[in-house]
Amino acid sequence: MARIVTYNVEWFDALFDDDGEMIEDGGWSGRHDVTRRGQLEALGIVFTALDADAIMVIEAPDDNRRRSTKRALEGFAYAVGLRARRALLGFRNATQQEIALLYNPDVFDAAHDPIGHETGKKGAQDAPRFDSVFRFDLDTDAAADLVTWSKPPLEVALTLKESGREVRLIGVHAKSKAPHGATNPQEIMRLAIENRRKQMAQCIWLRQRVDEHLIAGDSLIVMGDFNDGPGLDEYEKLFGRSGVEVVLGENGAAELFDPHAKLALGQRVGAMPTTARFWIHAERRYLQALLDYIMVSPDLMKPRPDWRIWHPFDDPVCYETLELREALLTASDHFPVSLEIDL
Image (cartoon, rainbow, N blue to C red; front, side, top):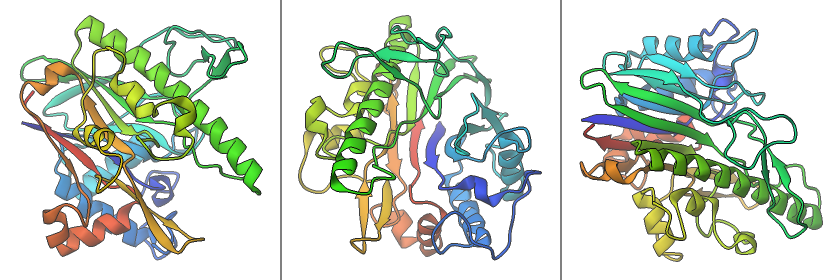
């Protein structure tokens, strides 16, 4: 039985120096009112409790000429004593928030294995490589939009050492729809719609890749932060559905499965699962949302996998374990989602 996790760690990068060493001091982290020492201690508790074989880290430490995602994550894993102690990075990005995989090298071999062809600035419509440009018309002007990923998805060929079975992983951090930088209602509306268009285009691009894998008969897990979900904002009606629905599969396409997404899609009102908790300063309250998913291909449903959101209030074990509950609240504004599966 393997445990595979997706976890968005808010500003993980701020906890390391340029040598990849953890900054365990009383200075402020990237999290509001949380010190670097406090966030690192909380993350150590959470990662230890997860005890995962593979963790897709969203907002992993930065990788550039001076900094190394691999060095930072592997140093953290060694200090905490994790089994998932080897780090894999895909395409770098310029946001200081990488997508990386921590995995147990005793159980898995893992390689960055991007699919698709490279494009020039003009792009292509047929699922190009995720560090390239996608052409797609999302409105009614008959002109193709040019779409890129600010954080290109991480495509992993994950191979079980014992059996040689390969499972494809795609780690995702889709475009945020928040209208950052807007100063008036008109600007808020314009940016919100523009961001949703970009997020939808990214999900259509991703679904094209999913189709390729399903046609090839690959075992596939798509996981990460989609910054989206059914019924999440009022602009969804302009597009007819959420990006999550597009990636899961629609209109007769072969479907991926995530039980939390299924519940949210089938119940637009009432209690729903949530994976993130944000403080809304203007309203002085917390907003909870379902943003993080682990979607699996139909063949991976056969061993009856089990999903879990490590929510500090909604999961009974997390709530009753005071140290873990407080650590989850301190470590990040997102909570881990795990998949227990017999591979």
